[in-house]
Amino acid sequence: MMVMTPGCRLGWRLACLVVLASLAACEGAPAGPENKPLPAGLPELIYYYPADAQRDQQLIQAELNRYTGEKIGATVSLRPIAWASVQEKTNLLLSSGERFDIIFAPSWLHYANYAPKGVFAELDPLIDRFAPQLRTELHPAFLAGPRLDGRLYAIPTNKEAASQYAFIFNRRLVDKYGMDVSRIARLADLEPFLQIIKENEPTVQPLFMLADSNAKFYDEDSLEPIGPADIPGKLDTSAMTVVNEYTLPSMLDKFRLVRRWFEAGYINRDAATSQSDYRQMMQSGSAWIILGASGKPGAAAEWTAMTGGIPMVQVNWKSPLISTESATNSMLAISARSRYPGKAMQFINLLHTDAYVNNLLNFGMEGLHYRQAPDGTIEAVPDGGYKPAIAWTVGNQFLNYLASGEAADKWEQYRQFNRQAAVSKVMGFSFDPSPVSREIAAVSNISRQYHGILNTGSVRDVEGTVEGMLAKYRLAGVDAIIAEKQRQLDVFLAGRGMQHEGRSPLEQ
Image 1: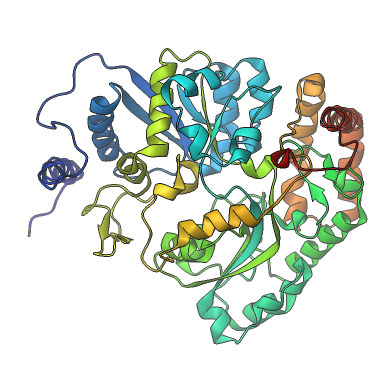
Image 2: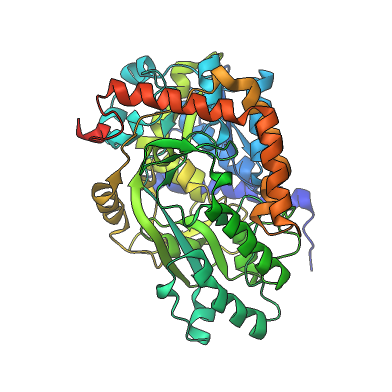
């Protein structure tokens, strides 16, 4: 029996690439004259995005460049950033001045902090020249949410415009124990189900958590984020005032709850430091619930596809809301120092308008990484070498192939979801952190020290830990941050003629 060395395997996969490209051309797939080499000296675009390492990334990049070389006269260097280090690596890239052309720049990676500093290019002129169709393709929230002082520095992914939390459960265990998970109305309602798993499934973690798990957000129906989640100061929409959420009794109650669960063995002991992810844990059967997942239509089916076919149950939490945060949680920006800003915008436009490019980056190459059924749905090839699970970060989800088992009308469900969602009263408001940038840097460091251990119940003295965190926050200037958020919000509301009440900006 012949044993293939790693070099042989690579050569075989490269040969597959040539064969598949030739077949694609014969069958009429979007392909240029692949037998002709690309012209020398084409501009190369450096594209940073979050994704874990994929064995066949170089195959995908080669095929992408064959196509973009013909389409826009440029090639693309794919630079994935592992999810475990996306915060640290992205901040380092943006603060160090390292060269890039396109980068994933959502609100939760401090978009509003870097944009006013001249890190990102202003995009309205580039859209007008290279991608005017984006103005009609995107929901109005996507063009309103990212604006800072009226200027647009990033293009959101075209997907669900509203946000809604959900619990995602492994259906096998839900059915096995006859659990009525539909009656879950608050975080504490999970407890009897966690106990069932603890008592009956010794190899399953009842509540797998990570340092950034969303337990602290679940019951605050009237609070909306303002700026990055690691900086205190959320909007109480019942009074239109900015509050330090960590001073609220409800927050302390949640920290006590997750500590009790930690002590009961429901939460994994390494929750505050684990580098695992939900997909890996669900796929291995070590976890059975995803906490704080998106409640968008078809989320359960997406998780089924991402975990290799494990059936899931979705239980939505709260009503869907279109807000600045939901409209800016997945965006691409162009470097203000890019040598090829026009080409960069043309590539972003391809991600939004060209189904071949979009699905190539999301799912790889047909026959090698996925198989497509006669009805158009796809199924991943086991151990195919490319399954990044990044569709929500790439251009336009309405171009995505449907996975086997997903609803045929999934994208119409998305449109209906967007149409029916309520719109935040402060839609379009973005906090400018520059007046308190020194305080924010200090507070962010404190958040890194405390949030993970509190969110996961990993501290014995919950009250003392919260008191210590609040004391450090005060010394670092958190009150100045909250006051500045309130000042900017009042100016925004006054400019809209709302004075703490009125219509949403999408209705005006």
